[in-house]
Amino acid sequence: MVIGFMEGSLLTAPDFEDRLMRKLQPIVRKEPRIEFLFGYQNRLSLLAEWVVRKLQVAYPEKEILSIGVFNKKDTLSYAFRGRFTSKLLLPEGEDVLHWIVGKADFIFTFMDPLFCLSRDCSLLYSRCAKEGRCINLCTQEDMDKVREKIPFLPKWERRALAGKLRGE
Image (cartoon, rainbow, N blue to C red; front, top):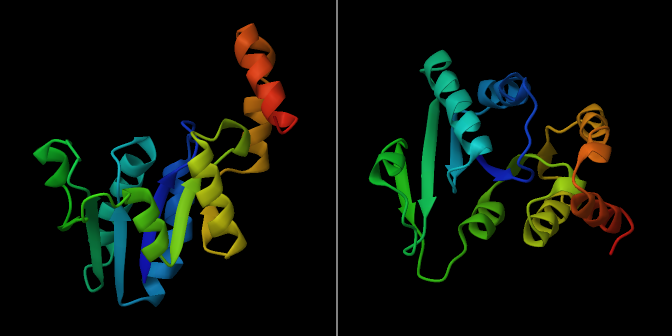
């Protein structure tokens, strides 16, 4: 079993780690070997790494690997690279996120489509969701809470979000 993580929105819920743990524990109990793929150093990845470490401690009889996926142009510090049980260097020109999405059986994300980081992330999310491989830990309640704050944003951000809601 191969599981990847994709940051979709800069936002995460305060109980994100608990949500992720509740989703991953049944998988870990069922599978003898799981590879967790981590690409970029971001908030979601850091929280997911912490959950994976907890699972490694809780299930020592399972083979739970955390794999850092990097490309040649990656300039991340070696301290970041040292956090994984193994590392994988992709060929020149290979995109880390696309590679992870292509290899993973499941992709975990926290994605509010309105606040998606990029069009590319949105398209990857849609592809995974259509294939039934995407597990979005962002609930409708989370989205509603964020939308309540839109009137307090600067005018230019409100206009951009309104355009996004209209599909512009």
